[in-house]
Length: 85
Image (cartoon, rainbow, N blue to C red; front, side, top):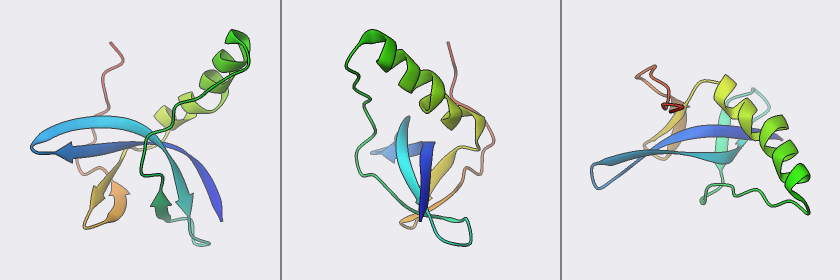
């Protein structure tokens, strides 16, 4: 089973927010499961932490945003991206 970081759209009590999670894939490449809590990188130094963000987490923004529908991950029906501002 492979995994990567992905942006997931959440909705809680009518409020929408986005978070980065680890997402795990089936053999066929479809998202299968994800971490319940968003990821919070930790580094032994500022440089290591910066590297983690740059090398792994930022890749999450290069992929389509996922959303949870009926306890399944699917590409977001609205193709908008979270604002980088």
